[in-house]
Length: 255
Image 1 (cartoon, rainbow, N blue to C red):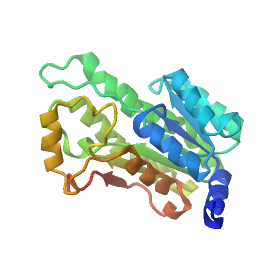
Image 2 (cartoon, rainbow, N blue to C red; image 1 turned 180 degrees about the horizontal axis):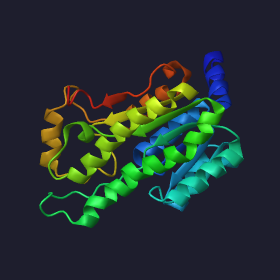
Image 3 (tube, helix red, strand yellow; image 1 turned 30 degrees about the vertical axis):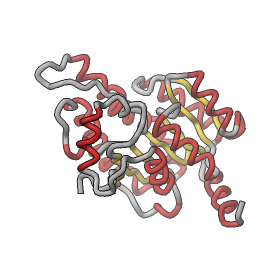
Image 4 (cartoon, rainbow, N blue to C red; image 1 turned 90 degrees about the vertical axis):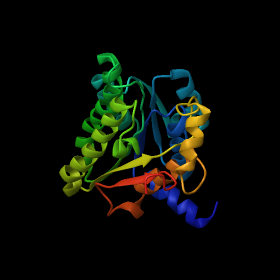
């Protein structure tokens, strides 16, 4: 380890723990691995207890990484997990609202249940965890909140009205939180990924994938690590004067 990387790890550790929701797979797992390598203590949240606990053990065990299984779309679970994070690590330096679900379907056939599911997890979950850690960060007079939105929240997409609405809501929520908490030293930004290769996108038909690749100037699909690196930057001291912004990570797809 270089002297510079050791100093960066010490800085990350002193900033407090980072809560990462949806951490058991995909983009969330990549974020967790990237932050652990950079020195942040972590609180990992997902429904899958077995996967979560295995990842926490791999990334540093109970001293550095706390597994907190729970329902992201449940207010009581958000409160419980925020309290556990503060009790364990003392300071909550960051929150990454990453957990997300899709329930695709055309709007004229969409059931109320299909409509509601992405709102409950994607948008409500982001509010619940922000509400849970916001007062803690305000008292500390420091903190970083990073919300994982989507380019679909900027462009809309046929067959994903519910998902698009939830992600657009996250972008608007990000701006509002940035304005409310900025005077207390808390930043809030969003990351809007494009097509990232994960379990969620792997089931798309081959023709859809080819058509999408044609729209990407960089001519490749994104990897979870492409998003994780941006999240790491937004949590760092280097991003201390950035708030209320949405960073698009899509290879130029919607440029």
